[in-house]
Length: 252
Image (cartoon, rainbow, N blue to C red):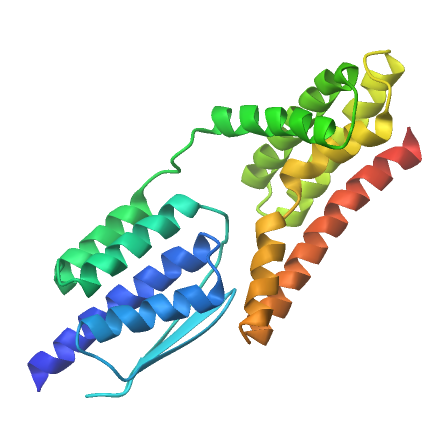
């Protein structure tokens, strides 16, 4: 009996760590719950249940000890690489290629891994994406450079402010403020023509598109609390971006 309890405790740790990494990386709620239950079943614990919101995970195993654990999710971002790594580990567990100890060690390595893209590359891509969005919105080539500069500076500001002040909405507000200010100055200096298109395309890297998609998918899957929570977070993020632009236009 003591050996069964010890194994159940180890499986519980593997399931919770897998769910924690996926939820912190921006995975959909139903996908996280399904992965945790499948891992437990692969290790021979069929009667498991999981319930989660964007800020916490509750996981229980009915037999042999009716064990239940709760962990809190403090931070959330978008990292598809980590989600893919956890899915790969889950498939290996299902195929019997990993023991409980090996699976837990692989998940710990995934959790410790640094982001797969350096900051300078993400900032460069945000600038390039801003220019591409401008062309997609039927902008002119002479507005591409202002959009690239405004989008890049806005993304740098948002990333830097998030490190100084750990309040996500304040970082996005600051990023939008810099985007608006840069766009106005560049147009007044004669380097751009269409101010509205430059602003809209420059804020696109800050728009929480994945969060909105996940909120809709969670609602369609019946996870009403998670879907509404993510929808509210996406709405506040969008409001912070709009407030930053509006605040700047009020004073310039």
